[in-house]
Length: 262
Image 1: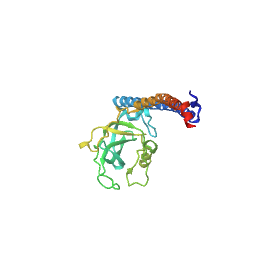
Image 2: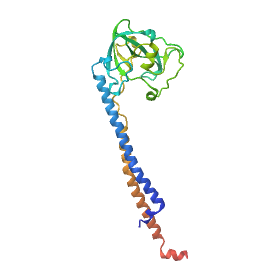
Image 3: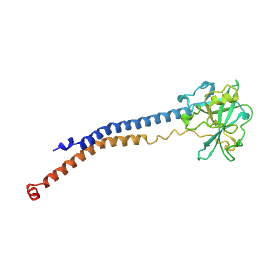
Image 4: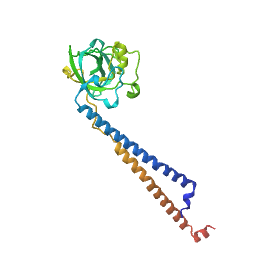
């Protein structure tokens, strides 16, 4: 009755079904792990943003690589802005997806070390080859508060570190590169300024990272598991249909019809 299952066609179909089931189950767990990682990341960012600011030099130092556990930690530093060596980061967008620059200004600490401060976004009103007009920061000694960020790399950001750019323009924020350019000790990573607020919102301070969205990974996981459960159901449906079709074909071949065929 089910001898057709030994045919080449049905053996191949059954093998494909047996392969698809564990693959789809594994894809479901992959999406589940992505969901769990996203939830953990959101919690880590939320905790970092809610914590009281600590001195920047307690979390980073010259040549230091900022670990994931310290990303978005609120830090503060006391010093003065060095606008003479200010640079802009090309092709950056604001919350409205307008293209412009990020303003990166060295902040000289009391001990002579430098902390890179991303003061925010300005529009690209003029030609890309010209250094844009940047609102000046407050003069004199002050305290800056912001979120600690890791040095940017092409691998992590997908942005190519183009060479030969116009003077005082960069593609990626790198404390190592800025240390070479300044000839000073620069703390690893940089800070996204959150306080004090800028005059007339220029530069526009960079908003907090999204730490509320969890994406659709859990929904995708459930979908993959539903697909996996549907494979054996579909296989059974096809088997029953094949058996029925073969039974109907056999029933139509009666002795009378066989004799008539002769």
